[in-house]
Amino acid sequence: MGTCWAEQQGDCSGALSSEHVITRGLFPQKMVPASGMPRLKGATGLVSIDTMTVKLCTHHNGVLSELDDAAIDFVCALRERNRLIMERFRARFERNQTEFSAASLAVNGLLLQRWCLKTTINCWRAGHQGFANWRPPRSMVAAVFGAELSGGAGLGLLVEQDDQDDEGGVPASIGINELRRVDRSVSGSLVRVGGVTLVSTWDQPIAATPFESTHGAMRLAEFHAAEIGAGILNVVLQFDWSGRPIPVVERSITRAHHHSIRR
Image (cartoon, rainbow, N blue to C red; front, side):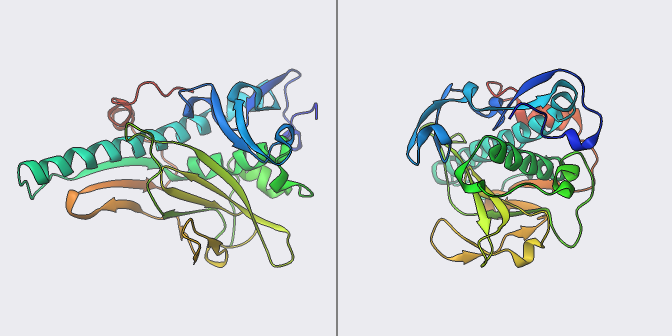
């Protein structure tokens, strides 16, 4: 398809550009595991992340770059959370430390919600088999650019299991799948990264969108969850749904140990 998938917005620039299906900066390596893409013909295999692209005009590609930054911030926050947890586990068992100062890592929830919607549309445009015979509604495209969703639709979160690489970082992988209603129509999408499942809907409430967890049980995600974590180690991801940008100082602290991630 040789047109910008956001052309309904009515402000396309003349030139087309390549948009990575999944944010390039989330992967330190070039070759990544993939499935569901047409070239793999139903199999799973390694593909170059730089070949997994769709077309957006240069204007819309630039406008949506802040969503890529939000996804990178989220993964950096997951990595920092894991780093702090491992550090505090060692202190607890090696030095018998029982109290820890609060560590709160900020995540821009609304930008992450828009990134999930954008990535879902990218998968559809790239021919992902899970989104065959489906087309994103106009309201979903508009929501990628900041229009409000109604009726409890949007982003839900659920912590499921650890998904780390050999050094304890994330993501070891990023999984994207469709959710379907009883009539087999697409109702939402799942993005799994670092043991966290992000559930996106655009025309039905998160509270009415059960999905099969990695353990095989049917679960519901928490709509616009306020936080992930805490417990005795006192490390928490704090989700801000106000729409305000995350302060530069907080973003710098979160990214400090994970500078290899870039957009």
